[in-house]
Length: 395
Figure 1: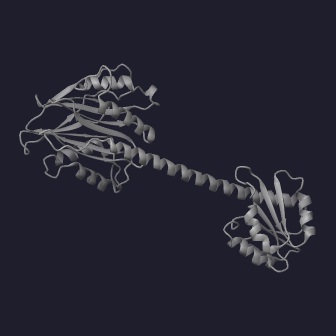
Figure 2 (figure 1 turned 180 degrees about the vertical axis):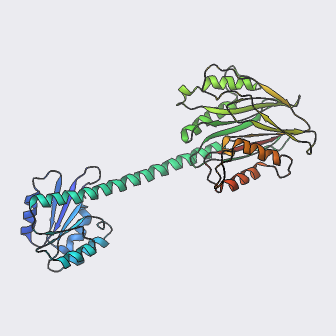
Figure 3 (figure 1 turned 90 degrees about the vertical axis):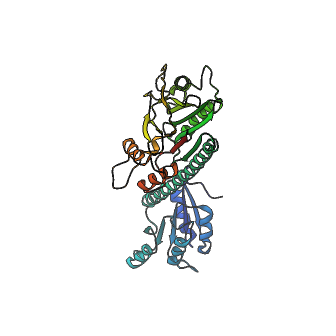
């Protein structure tokens, strides 16, 4: 079994020389040295196989041997995948500049006239081995990093797939809905939903957990499960201010790994054609309403409540707006408008409001077009944050 190098910092020396006396001399030089393991090969035809087995951190190789030319063997070491980077110190009986140049040309790392003084030999062995061990440890660390990144990417993909699986189905009844959700490469904490609470009240929300990664996704899923099941004590889910107040009570940062979230939550009353809403740190929803499609006006809906989980004991207020014959609501996360644009100023919420205002009366207004326009501005489909936008047609 090959000796372990990485992590143990063990120096493994392989000497290849046809003279047993040279092997014994080197062995005696190294026998008392701490953390150096010595191996001797007197048959150069077996050198490659033995090196593959031992995984040396430095190879000492004679240049003049029977059956195999020393320079040719050095070439074989450099062509062999397992030894191509192992430090190679060639040994010669005399100083020969031409031979030395040839040895360096084919990849030798050092040249010694045998046999050198023990102090010099040990110093060179330790020096070359240290560099090689550092390279191995760097490569191992890089492989470990790649593996951890692969596992993280797999976890993020799994979490993103689960988020998508529990998002609501698109509706095509009295109320029509459409949405676009694209998770970022680092997976943010976006989630949204809507449902009929009873025959009259239709609830809708979008939340965005701070930060990225599996932790943010897990918190968003936890909140989403509460909203889907309407399972939170002392909560009237038809009262948005009460819902946010209770969410703030239940999801304080100190109890959830210092994470908080923004949310916009609204309830539409079919009987009174009215939207009651409340928000916590979230960008304003867009309410597009008018007596006809040519008379549509854009309203920004926000109640200016603080972010959920940041401050205990906050009471969130309700606001409301009346729906007209043609009304739609657009809820979104900040990943829709915080967009970098190559060679241009970054897109902002103000930019997004201007964009929506300019397209609100267009028959081509839909969430897929908004996404494509954003991608076009950004110049890439790889966004820095989750892209989440929900369109709800109330009439």
